[in-house]
Length: 432
Image (cartoon, rainbow, N blue to C red; front, side, top):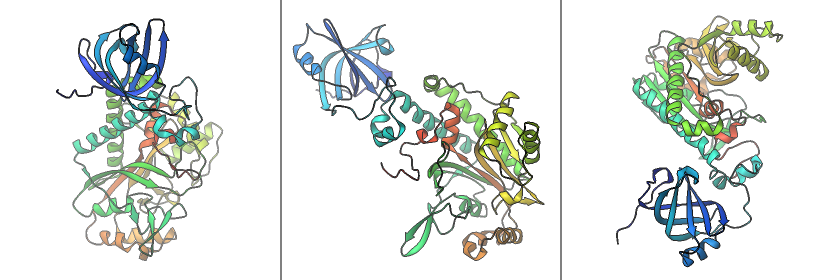
């Protein structure tokens, strides 16, 4: 007997015998009929059992409860009343795995389980179609970003997660023991990206985990997140970097709008593809806008959450969901950003008041780089592996790092960034 291949619920065709596998979303008893709603990765299908026809199937079905794992073979028929407009009349039902009762969390939106409890049972939480939609959007977003980079001559690379020194320095590094030596989980692939600019791999990107040991308790910070990084050499100015950043966002949003209609609908999210070029504001422009709206900042102050939120509201009213902030003060930017007097060639890319990406033109001149490192209290000797790349022919270069979860968070309008991560890491959460 030929083995039947499994069919996902979105590929079922009326009039065709099919095998479906998944979890029971709900059970309903209605007079002479019993209904099982089976849920798989792609959606729902109704299994309709006529009580007068199959005693064996009915007996098994009567023992089933929500979240039992089952396999069903039967004929697919059109049914306007059923979810998705189709149903299966079963020839056989197999109980693959039994679910304990009561369930630890809800897998529908009828009852909302607290976020911490959901994370404790994340494997079950993702069975909820709304939760699963988040990771479909994240998957497509990263796919589109890769497509954009590859079509623009970038090469994907993978740099070390275990590092001898941090790109940002300070107390936000996770130390670890590495063969009796001190090492750190990477804050960023920054140092290695720049070193590669001297390698002839002059356009590179990396999508990988980065770690920040910050004692935060906000809805936009986590200890581990997935960063989308790029670096490019032979640039004229930071404007070359801005063009890649805005092109990446535009291409990705177009892709999401086309390929994630169902998932966007679940969240009531409307994707507005912004026109190029994005609005550019200098840091000084931002201070002027904030001052006009009652928020006085001194030149050189960092922009805090309330400042960014207010700016986002003002820019959105002007028709700019996405915008750059450029020419930041050098003292609030990392040592590797090129300085321009008191200002720098650093930039941030914001969306509706949330920083999504940060970068700019880097300092490629060895003497200038060492000078700024010393000014910022860093010991150049600890960065010799990095600095050596600047002594043997380093072209002008720049790049950025983009937070993939923040990107998806803003697209879907989700309040807490932890929901965009399968197993989030925070100061309080290390398990599961």
